[in-house]
Image 1 (cartoon, rainbow, N blue to C red):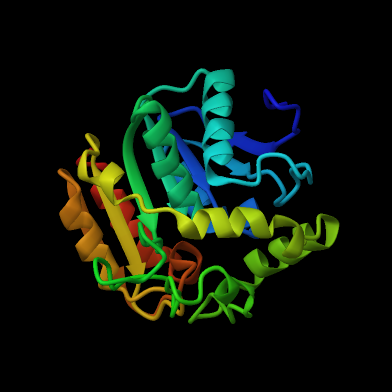
Image 2: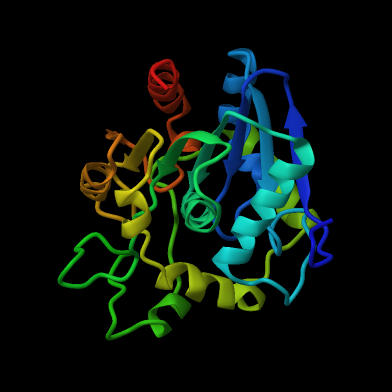
Length: 257
């Protein structure tokens, strides 16, 4: 139960160094199955949160903004007493981690992984790596258009079935969470990344339908301790489309942080 009285659902397994997994808007924590299974086998503690209005968490008109999502993460971390946390976010999940840092600083995070999320979604003369063709000329109306498939490679059938079952049990209403999408897309996290004092790994999908994969190197260059990677044959849901490549990448990177 959050401080504004919204019930959030999360999973918590394992007993090692904690890893917090945050999925994108409209997604379900079941999408992380290949990542979670790998991390558990590697000896990590894995916590995966369904954001408010998503997954099995409560539907509400309250807090439909990225800053409130960050507060939810802070309250979960406090409730669980976590330290030395590795934060991994896909899409809006990565933005939630940047929002957390903007409000609270990096503690207790010791490393952050951004999966296919540009720090600035509105394309302009200062940043060419926005979301599809989103610009100041068409914001926010462009966000009402169909996004199309997020993936370039089919995900594992077992994962797909788990997500479908979760969606059937807890349908996601796009229109009801539209204020959150607009707020998410409005943000510019470059100033936060410029002063990020923990290691940052930015991972892009080479065939992402949403972002030019060149954003990863450009974003990592902003960070004092930034690194980037582009995973071939992957779209927006990199960690689930190419789990073996993604897991091998983070295994090697996590040994350095």
